[in-house]
Each structure stands twice: as C-alpha cells, then as structure tokens.
Image (cartoon, rainbow over all chains, first blue to last red; front, side, top):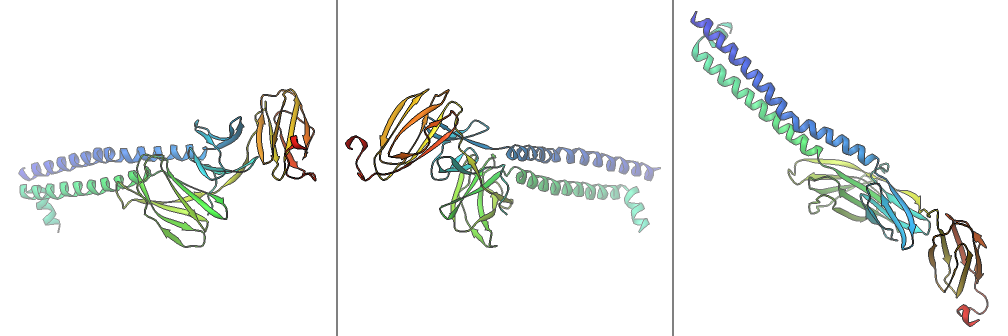
Length: 103
Length: 215
C-alpha cells in the first residue's frame, strides 16, 4: 500500500513539473515570438522604403515616404534611411532600404 | 536495473532523489532555453541597413541603425573577398556610419552592444538612378553658361530676365501655359511647356568675356 502511495505522489509530481515546464516554456518563448513578428514587420516596411526627388524654388529636394525631406547636394548625404546625391541638373543617384543588394 | 527503478519510484528516499533530479533537469533545461530565446530575441532586434553609392571613383558606404538596439559595425566585406575590420562607436537609433571605400562593399557584420557575442551579417543595398522631378506648374531651366556673359529673357505665362557668366539652374514657377525665350549668347529652345526641363548652352561671340550689357 505504502509503495503505491509513493508511486502516486511521484506521478503527481512528474505531472506537476511537466505542466510547470510547459507554462514556463510558453512564457519564455513569448518575447522571442514577438521579436520574430516585429522583425518580419520591419523587413516588410524596409522593403517598401523609397525615395523621390523634386525641384522647388529653393533647389532640388529628396523626400522619403515617411515624410523626411532634405536638400539634395552634390555630395552623398542621408535622407531618412536613404543615401542620395545629385549627379547633374536632372539626375540623382540613391540607395534605399528597398534597393537590391550589391552582392 | 528495473529493481533500482522500482525502488526509485516506490520508496520515499527514491522519490526525493527523483524529484531533485527532475526539478534540476527541468530548471536546467528551462535556463538553457531561456538563454537561447534571449539570444534569438536580441538578434531579431538588430535592425541595421547598409547602403552604397558610387562617388568620384570610390564607394560611399552608409550603415544606419533603424532599430532601437544599439550595435557596433565590426567588419565590412568587399567584393574581392577581403574584409576590413572596423570598430565603430555604438550606433543608436537613426545614427549612421559613413565609410569611403576603394572597393565595392557587399556585406557588413554588426554586433549588439547589449551582448557583443550576438552578431549578424547583412547585405549592402546597391544604388539606382532617378530623375529629379519638375513640378507640373514649373519649368526647370538649366544653363550651361560658363565662359562668357549671357542673358535669358522669358515671357508668356511668366516673365523675367537673368544675366550671368556661369552655370545656373533655376525654376520658373508658377506657370500654367507655354513660355517663350529670347536668347543672348545662348543656344537652346525658343519655348517650353510646364513640367518640362529646358537646357541652354552658352555660345560665346568674338567679344568674349564681356557681359551682355557691355556689347
């Protein structure tokens, strides 16, 4: 009888530990899962990050979708998360997060 | 073997030993898993963007932190297969690293400042060309005008005149119809429509170097 009682306690403890480990594992996983979602959202937004160029009375300007704008210079400078400069009166060279990799 | 297992699962002392082993195993396993998830989480929040544009025969590399986890740039991989070791100050959100390189960079390796052992390699985004747009209610005037004095007069929907002896780019704005040009020492079109670009090139006469009002 005594040994059967000990055996039951053992089973109960094993089950309790299993449940606790399961709950803890889910709790521990949550930040990692969230970071995966956040990273995917970030990758998506970077894939859409583009730049445009237009003239105004005060010269050529570069502007990005999220509302950042800056004067376009003859030397490379950053506009939001893009690099850009003016080559001649009507042409600009730029690199943005939505551009293809070089390699 | 089965007798030991039997004793372990049925005797009180066996139960205590088994519980200690189980709990230690569970805690150890969870700790290992927690370390792993921490590592992956920190790695997932490294959000660098690397970009390159060609400039005067060199390559102008920019690395920006678009996230909130600070990092340092450790290495720049070049197209030839070599790598440059750099050790920058930590870059926070929106901060840039700019490098002028002789070879085309293809990737950069950045490491978290929260845990220097967490690093990722990201590709470098290449460049493209784009037109600088002219607003629909404007005409962009480009004068390649160095060498001698010239003057340009326009009339129609908008009127004005300028005289210079150098290159000038300016916007006639606003215009909602055609504009006509009178050229002095310039070669180019005689009229233009809104939203277009007009280019004039200087054509120096024999009275070289004198401004138009002295001819």
